[in-house]
Image (cartoon, rainbow, N blue to C red; front, top):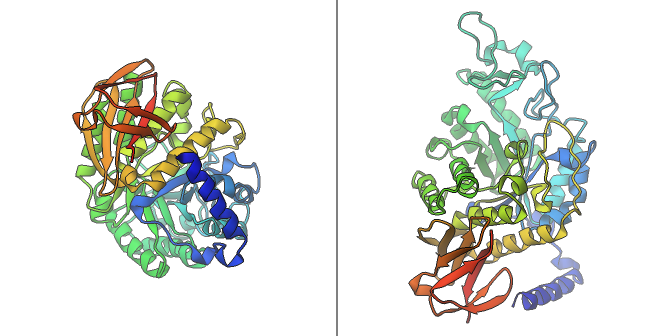
Length: 446
């Protein structure tokens, strides 16, 4: 079935290519609904040591072929030198591009090619703090938090981020300047939203006011706002669309690495979504730039197969899929995003294709990313159904690096099914035997 679909799709592409009127343009792009987003995180420092925005644009076909529809670009702004560590999250100018990454025109070009490839583009935004050599430090010292005893500007507390100065959100002028800087990227450059760093460290009422202005300025376009945080007021007050599934990721590690029961993942999902207003989404991931600084998925989840089982467990329970650029080729070593780390994008074609196949399923079947969840508690195999008015899928993930047996839910016993990832056909009995870290995504045959 999969091969037939690919053949039909290829024929459609050829026919479309013959008619220039059918070619998508940047103006045709519409940002997907938040519960349809499959996101790709770009760390420019794994693409090239210089002019990396152009290098990202040169790889846009490969990124798009993964099936993602929103690209999140890590900070590209000039980086502070005073007390600096070369962190892109240490910003000395909110409305410029660091020469290391390219120029503002390079970023506009990247935004254009993203839109031409039917992908949104969002920028990382750091509103909690600035570099010590940001002009605001000398021009507006009252825009920063001061030590009560020494009256000197302090770094953000309780963290040990000594390379940055903490902003004071009691100051209304600073709030206005911050919002204006964000508006620049929406109005003048055309970004489709922001991933907001340390969102929980910034007052929710600032986000509320800023996001209202950003949405207004972007009309008739939609924007998406992602909070790096897990506070419920990101949504109830701030107006964000998505925030981080930090607790789910922690549980994922405990299940795969520490032997906790697979059913803990269902509990973690329920706990995160119990707090969310309708229509909001948790970003789910097996890694990101912070986590890959310490360990990459192919090591954190034991091996390559473990990393893919963990990915299936992450994105098909409740959507919110993220791929961190480099994981699709199984980059094995930690990536320090303070420095250039070369990635061989041809290193693991089969793994890239596996991610592509999974995101294709995620995109092609709404039931898999946002359908109703029904789960059956188990120790070693995560078993759940995703369904909507049109389709039902049974997903089974062996969370152990050993063979495991799963009970088949009674409603699925005796059904003829197809494994969507392998095209294998089988009739379900009372149990399923799974190889180490094997996963199955089963649909009922017509």
